[in-house]
Image 1 (cartoon, rainbow, N blue to C red):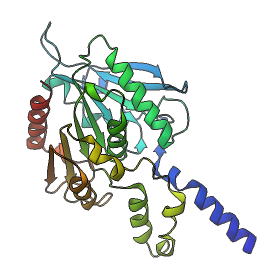
Image 2 (tube, one colour; image 1 turned 180 degrees about the vertical axis):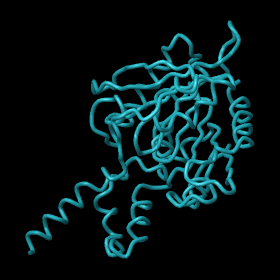
Image 3 (cartoon, helix red, strand yellow; image 1 turned 90 degrees about the vertical axis):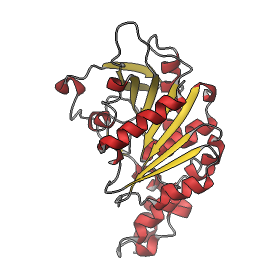
Image 4 (cartoon, rainbow, N blue to C red; image 1 turned 120 degrees about the horizontal axis):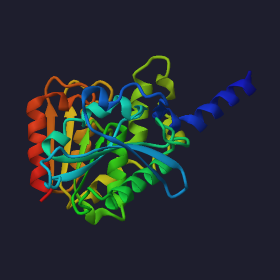
Amino acid sequence: MRTLKLLLLTALLSSCTSLFFHPHNVLIDTPDKYGIKYQTENFKAADDTSLNAWFFPAQNKQGEQAQATVLFLHGNAENISTHFRNIAWLPAEGFNVLALDYRGYGASEGTPTLAGMQLDIDAAMKHLLAHKNVDPNKIIIFGQSLGGALAIHYTAHSGYRANIRAIIIDSAFYDYRQIAREKLAASPLTWLLQWLPWVSVDNDYSPAKSVAALSPLPLLLLHGEQDVVVPPHHTQQLLTRAGEPKTYWLIPGAGHTQSLHNEAIRKKLVEFMLRHSG
């Protein structure tokens, strides 16, 4: 029995970080079903992992340039085929969008890790900067949930920071260990394991450690008031630690990553992006 307990504890200690990733390899939906123009693009990360992304070109008049290009980083589950609707409306507003699938997600190769995902985002940035339809000096990073946490760390440490005009974070958590502890504390079955994340979760890429370093890039933080997956206090903690300029929108009635279901919020977001993409 003691051996069994030790084996169980070892398994828990070695796998907690991986619990943040819930990839899906099957494409559930595609933009062409809705008449949305896009193209599949492939490139490699620095460790030679092949990655897949969808590029949505700005729907401008012939000869007009895009207002800016958005690098979209989705949440921890499934793949871009279930997340693209969050950004598919942006091309009609004059913005290009590159929606990345991290390693292990969708058609991207490899196995998800926090370190590997940072390489994936960097590869996507390099791809955008060389893209014939992209102004390399007008990049906006937009991350949702886990994608928001990844975006904060990446942008704070990116070698391409000079190309980034603003960063938008929706429904992100403050710290990997904190959100893991909160989830364990929420269930009577795991309440006694609240200590586990402090010894088993990789916190080297914590948004809490990086968010202050985003300044002076313009930072917009959004969170749904009714989010029960990642409670709004996580974004409020990020706001407190972030430097200026920073903006916070708490969206009434919205759940997790649902802020942009509101047309008025979409309009405000476009105004924010136009203001900072010039």
